[in-house]
Amino acid sequence: MPVDRKFRLSLTLVVIAILMAVLLPALEREAMRAEQAGFRMVVGQLESVLLVKTAEMVAKDRLGDLKNFVNHNPMNWMKPPPINYIETDSQSDASRMRCHEAEPGYWFFDPVQALLVYKPNYAEGFGTQTTGDCVVFRLALAYLDRNGNGVFDETRDRISGLTLKRLDSGLSDR
Image 1 (cartoon, rainbow, N blue to C red):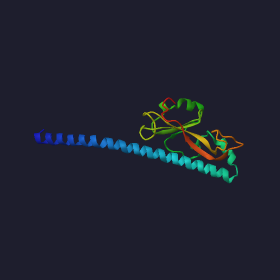
Image 2: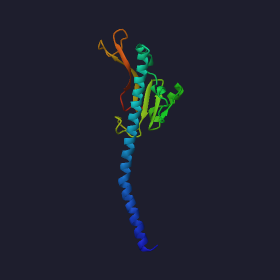
Image 3: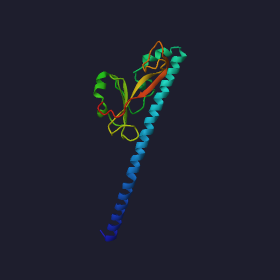
Image 4: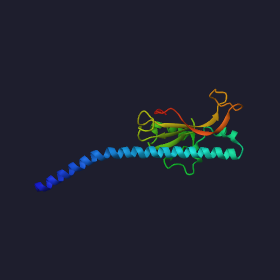
């Protein structure tokens, strides 16, 4: 191989290496942003589904029945559920599905503990401490706490709807 061709090949490889060193971190940042946007979109869709469920019960004059939906899987009300949702139909599925075993970038519902769980690919931007930690939600009752005790009292407190309550982050041992 002539010297001129070797020099051009070497120069090309150096330029490619420099471009890769510059572009790969930028590509990873964009992948993190895309994952965060997808996560926020699913959370927004879930909140919309809860508003629709609340409106449906208000229209039927059955707002008090919303307490029966606490701890249900809100993904069941999304038609269709997100493509990155792994359905767990039974308690045996849930016992196998733990945060550390889940595939990054996927949602799943733990019917045993009534938790909706998302395992991010990247910890940054999700409020988790480390990569591998999960973001955990529970479907809860939103109510006006008239007696200020922090617990729903059916005789005193007024139900206002359903809410998606985010629990403590950094649950890697789930």
